[in-house]
Image 1 (cartoon, helix red, strand yellow):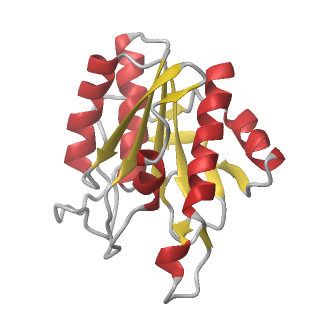
Image 2 (image 1 turned 180 degrees about the vertical axis):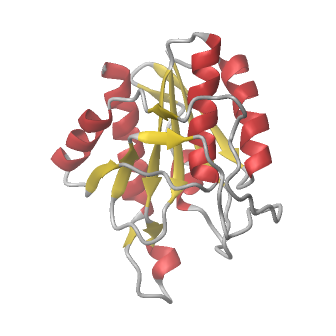
Amino acid sequence: MKVLVTGFEPFGGEEINPSWEAVRALPEEIEGAEVVKRQLPVTFRGVREILPRLIVEERPDVVILTGQAGGRPNITVERVAINVMDSTMPDNEGFTPEDEPVFEGAPAAYFATLPVKAIVRALREEKIPAGVSNTAGTYVCNAAMFTVLHTIAVAGMETRAGFIHVPFSHEQALDKPRPSMALDTIKRAIEIAVKTSLRA
C-alpha cells in the first residue's frame, strides 16, 4: 500500500505553511503503507501540472492533500471540490482567476472518496477538534482537490482521495489574535486521517 500526502508552501505573507510542516514530519511508513510526502506550490498552474504526474507516477492507494485554512479553528475534512477557480488574492505567481474552470469540459464537482465522516469521528475520539467542511473555497486548495479527483476518475483508478484543511499554527498566531493549533497536533491529525483511510 502507498499513501501520497501533500502540503503547501507558504503564501499570503506567511513564513511557514503548517500543512507542509506537519506533512514533512510524518513517518516514512504508517501501518505498513509507504508514505510519499510532497510539497506543492500555491499556484493554480503548478497543482494542475504536478498532481496528475504524481498520481500517474506513484499510483497511490490513498491521496490526502492538506492545506492551510487561516481563520478556521479546527481540522476540517472537505466533502466536495468544484470546477471553479476564482480569487481576489493572487496565487504565488500573481495569477488571479475569475470564474474559470479548473479543467474545461470536466464535471461541475467531485465528492471526496476518503471516509470523511470516519476521519472526523476518529479525530474527535482523540480529542482533536474536527468537522466536515462543505466548501474547499475556490482558491488553489480546491483546484488541487479537484485536479486529483478528476485525474483519478479519468484514469479509472480506485484510489481514495480528498483534502484536509488545517488551522494556523501557534507560531503564526503569536502576533495576531486568531485561531491556531499546535503543529504536533496537526501532524497527529494527519496521521490519524491516513490510518483511518487505509482501514476504510
